[in-house]
Length: 170
Image 1 (tube, rainbow, N blue to C red):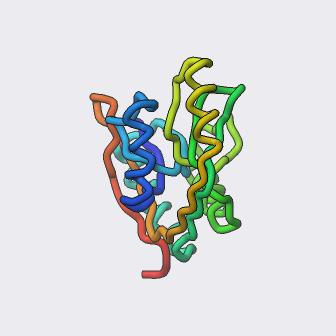
Image 2: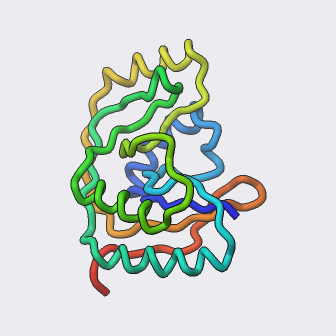
């Protein structure tokens, strides 16, 4: 089975992201807007039970996290992905690092860039047009997130929550 670890932002931020994702993200129907902590990896059901225990312990070491977004950015020219840039904080970096270290599955080929994808698999022209207009847009969003999720992928390609982990001491 494929698994991943994500943070889902508030409904308000998800609604803003989805206003673009409906049109520019072919994964729109497969997973809600999210910030990826651990990219998709393969594990068995038995391994997932152990991973959940590991993630529960990690969650206990962190307080709720501040999530700030204020601009759109892109991974171009590496790939034509447009995203909401999430301000990196030491706590977010530390959480991501610890989750990836403890789960120790396939290493990511990319450095951790906190973001919420709003468009991907765009042609060069479409990427240029959409990003050109979005990068002139200003928005401010700040919120506190108090949980992250272990997801698994269903046979139809969509993702669903396996377990949720609340940040902070129980």
